[in-house]
Image (tube, rainbow, N blue to C red; front, side, top):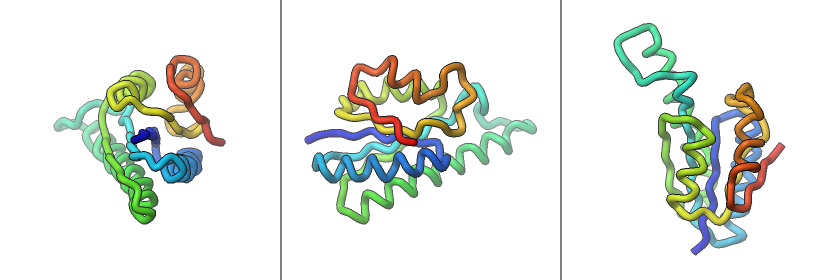
Length: 136
């Protein structure tokens, strides 16, 4: 069975990417993996500090983004695996794609992590050894 990986950050571009990933999973009769990476450079692990509230808010947004994309796929009867993790977005997405042997990676062109050098989308395209679709 084929595997499609949607990397989402909850942005508007990621929502467009979610539609594309769901359609691709449907077309390929694939399992859809929905991954959101809480950027470890932006949000540290939750602790008893002023940063804890920001981290909790980022995690809540991540879970909401994953749940929204998963719900789209589940309505069509597509098998879905959802995951929210902390890490570096590019490295984590590429590692997870390798772990699940993704046939396709789908993500938005710009989003919450677009400030990184080259942007997450551009780096995934340049570093991925798998088919990758970056959606506007």
